Length: 205
Image 1 (spheres, rainbow, N blue to C red):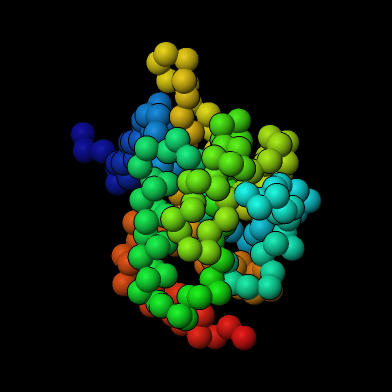
Image 2 (tube, helix red, strand yellow):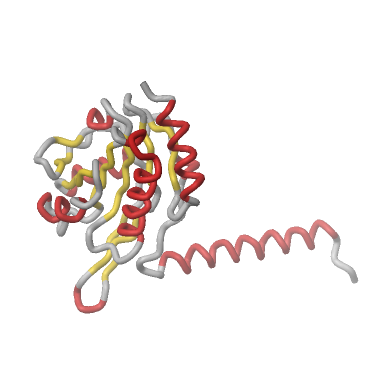
């Protein structure tokens, strides 16, 4: 006997759910993979909170640090094998393309690995990127910042007793009032990014 259409559709839906669950489980057990981009979770309060970290210049990093100039915020870590150096290189490319227009564009690299990323380590790591400042701090304060910026981060053990970090890999853009504007995803087309940044920066001030 032929299956009723409604039953057949239900079976397709169930198989789809199984497939999605399988893909999610595959990602969870693949250390070093970039987590999905939770753009839908971003809100007008992104970056706002009671966190208090410290910059590589020894200054406090709080939500007020996002005011006074437009800024890009990226969460990463210095032992990152690929995503973080690639992203910082992309940011350098954006700034080079935009030239003087991006002169006031601040770059914040907030570590997700404060155990290894001291202010000194971070300072060396971002020293080649104009306008970039590293941010680290106590684990409890970092957790507050992760929640404020809606960032996923988790420690993943490696063989030999070492570890790596899985973390969100998007770059967040804030205006000079500290208000969230938009995100740029990992390896997003550079021409599209610079076009968006150009429109944004021309509208500042």
